Image 1 (cartoon, rainbow, N blue to C red):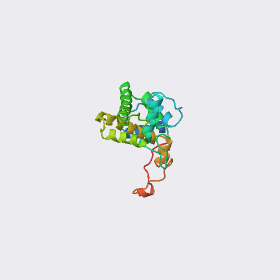
Image 2: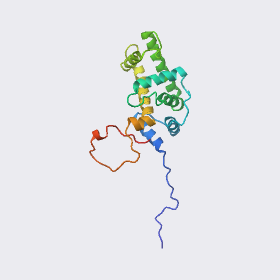
Image 3: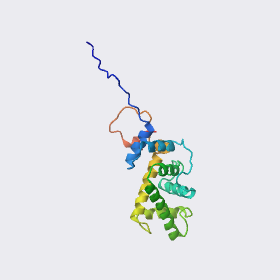
Amino acid sequence: MSYNNEPESASTPETENPRRVALKQMALLFGLSLSTQSLDVLAATVKGTMPLTTKFFTPDQLQMTGVIADLIIPTTDTPGALAVNVHGFLDTYLAECVSKNEQEMFLLGLKKINSVAENKFQKSFLACKPKQQTQLLTAIEKSDSGFTPDDKSFFTQFKSLTLFGYYTSEVGATQELAYLAIPGGYQGNFPFAKVGKAWALNW
C-alpha cells in the first residue's frame, strides 16, 4: 500500500507584486488605508509609467500643491518633492483613492491657505515669496494667524501624503533612502555610522 504525502491538487499561491507590497508597507507606516486597486494605480504613478495629467486639481491647484510639497521636501543634495512629481502623485491619489468628502476637505485646505495669504500678504499663495510661503505653513502647523486645528489636521495629512509619495518614488527609495536589491548575510549590531541612512524595503 502506497501513501502519497503530496496533496492531490496543491495550488501555488500567487506572489504579490513587490512594488504593491512596498506601497502597502509604506502606507501602513504613514497611517493610510489603500485598496488593492488603489495600490495598483499608485504603483503605476510612482514608477512613472503614467503620464502627468490633471485628474483632480485645476492647473493652479496642482502648481500650488507642488510648491507646498517642495517646501516640505526641498531639493538639497538629492532632488526634492517637485522634481520627483509628488504633486502628480497627490493628484492621482485624490482622484482615485479617497472619498468625495476627503476630496472636498483637501480642496478646502488649499483654499484656506490662499485665503490667509490674501489677508496677510494681499496676494495668493503662489504669488508669495518663498519666505512668506514658509511663514504660512509654519502658521498652519501652530494653528496661528487665522488657521484652526482643523487646518492643522489637513496639513498633517498633506505632509504624510507628501512623504509617502516621495519615499515610494525611485529617487526617494534609491537616493534618499539606502537600498540594496539583494542584501548580504545578517550581521547584528551593525554600526549606524557605516550605513548613514534608513533602508528602503523595495524598489
